[in-house]
Image (cartoon, rainbow, N blue to C red; front, side, top):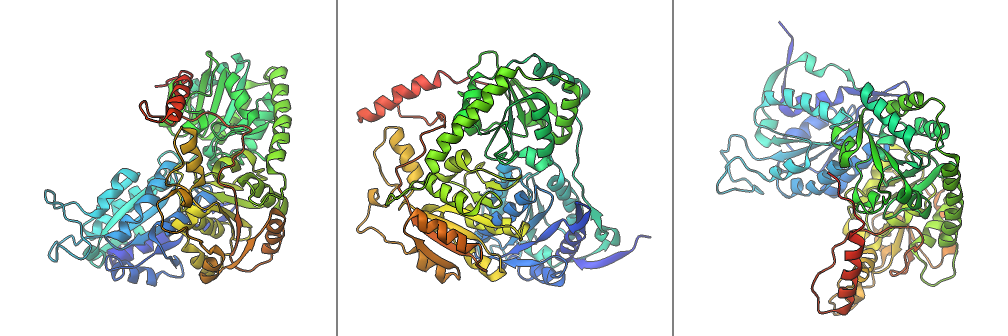
Length: 616
């Protein structure tokens, strides 16, 4: 008869998580680096007591905001290329729903995180409990049903023994390269405290290694034939290149074939910026070098990318009528998009096998040389955009240049929403895989500082530089205090343009009047003068204001030696963005308006939409 151990459901859950391991570069490590927790009446008694019991094997970290702590967990997984992960637990009600936005972010970006919100009583005796959402027509509904559409796997644990199969399925999803994403196990608060005789085998150590499925031989052959017939082939590297650890194989493939490579937001840093065939960013926020090639390409090899509209210029970027797509992706849903020749498999292994299948084939030399010449031209344009200035209000690009000059390319730069993703995608010169950490799948304001915290947990010996606008900072800044509390030093560059500058530029570009985005254009009795330096200092950070680009560079150099989180504030111009590079993006302009500016932009919009090529 199998041996059992009597534990509460919460104790069984935490002991099981503590027993999951992985192996990276020959070192065995816990798969779960810890659990973020904000306790409340839905999780403090059951799961809280259980976490205390395993606090040395499975550390618990206290945060200040449920959404932010889950962002940190997600950023940790991204910074470890999905090889390790974290969990996050909340009480029922607002604590749980605060976490839903982060769940959606993980879902869009295909990143693993285990979400453990407290839930209502399974026995329903005290219903309705504090914070319980009641559905008049369905007694099984709770606030946690909000997680269903943004979870790869969802379960509600209403009996203690259900945790065994639920965790089995959860682990499969979290560690599978194709299914990877957020898992939600909603934990009824009475069931957390109920006991069951669990089999000892449930707590045996297990090592999870990345699965590397090989491509179907027929698909591989068809892809090789398509590449061999192309005259102007182009590679688009997505985030899957990084998660697969395929950067070295991508470099070998590009050099062996002479194929130029461009990068999505998620795939940027797949190759170092100085690689001769790395054309940099592609799409709406792309370089002129990459986008010129994309317009002409007769074959696009999409590696580990979901071909989001920013990458494809809303499907108006690829203008060659003979264009075909080869989709290399571990997820069939992505591999076959837009009538692509699908190659379903691990990016690293598929690139290696494709290189072998291509033999000594090379792209036409004129195409390769054309790419290299375009890159040199773009670098001159980028240098001009990022050059130092004495302007009272520098541009975002000039601030980026200051960070690059002061700190070099051996840092990890992290950003999310607003204007910075567009400028950094084009202009930042990444030095190694994973050194560019952008959250632009969900483009979630407020990710930046919390994400920096998670990235620092994953890479404690690296300099993590968070670049954030004042709008995102005001939305979610509380994890500055957490970074100080945990001794995890960040360098935060806060660009203050007094409003939502990026969306204001889009508003004007679509014919609208500046309205409700910048402080000065919003309804107000008086304009706020936010003292970001004092605010950051009040959270425990070292903080200062830089009055110029030169002062910013000096402050950044000093920040390297600081022992705790440092916030450097600089005022910037909300109206300037880099004109070089870029591409049209489909943002629908009203057909009817009293404003002539809108009518003119609608005519332009209708002309641009004629370039779009509709896929499946």
